[in-house]
Length: 123
Image (cartoon, rainbow, N blue to C red):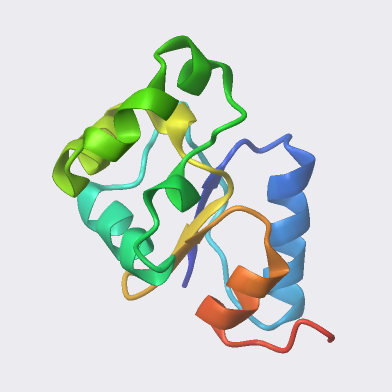
């Protein structure tokens, strides 16, 4: 079962939930990232799944990202500092965030999703 974090009424979250179901994955109901954020452990899994590129975890187009100037800070942060910040501030996480406890993904890139979740993106 895959946990999906996002915003229920967000078209991108809905699109990826539908795509994953079409590929045979079972998903939880969408967990509202305003109310419930991925754990530090889940964020660490995503970091490794997303080729250890911190920016792949970040909602770089979000208002909060810009208002706190994270663009200029992220390269000086340790991975643990980044995970703690993302766990505290779910709106900094690129959505949707999916995890089954062993692997995780962020965003809507079909290339990343098919690589991580091992499905044919042409289906």
